[in-house]
Figure 1 (cartoon, rainbow, N blue to C red):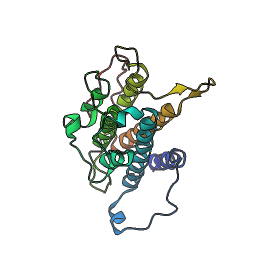
Figure 2 (tube, rainbow, N blue to C red):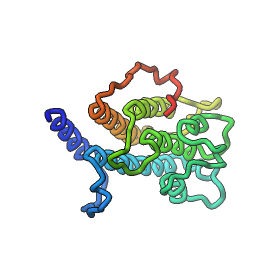
Figure 3 (tube, rainbow, N blue to C red):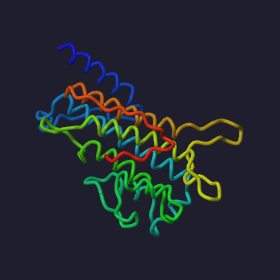
Figure 4 (cartoon, helix red, strand yellow):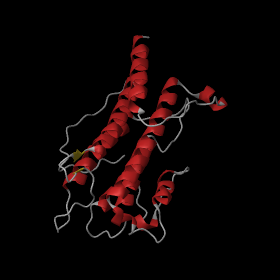
Length: 233
């Protein structure tokens, strides 16, 4: 009983602090909700908020790197990219990325030989990785299973990606993709860092919730983000 009370406090705190964007004013009751546990409802909320953050990140990256959209098939818009990334059911195969998805797509964004849309490659990688961490589900019910290690590992992968965005450069010295920066008047823009921070926090919190629920531990091996390879999810 004490663990359940602590868990509910954690969940309420996360939902109050994590959902900073505009939210629906009400959620109509659905008969399917009768087949959901408290954990299922929380997992649903996590997936919904994570998707919102990923959509925001996608738009910001395209605005910061407009040249990448010009590498996409003719006529492609940001809205079309959002549909490709987040429409249900998820599109898991993209010919322009050599049919890569999840962590397998991320390296394309930092490969100088790749002449395609690096923002799309990165976001197919990140969104696919987080999708995989939730077992490719967008909604959860009583018999749904989640793996705390996958959730934890995906958070560590996000940390590796953040480092690569800020440090990986092409032979001409330019970053593969622009993210954080400094304005002409010297003000530092950390909006990308904050978005990634929220995504990492969501994955870590969900990993902790599942670990507490199942009484299974998490392997928290120390990694060096500068040299680590992405963990398979």
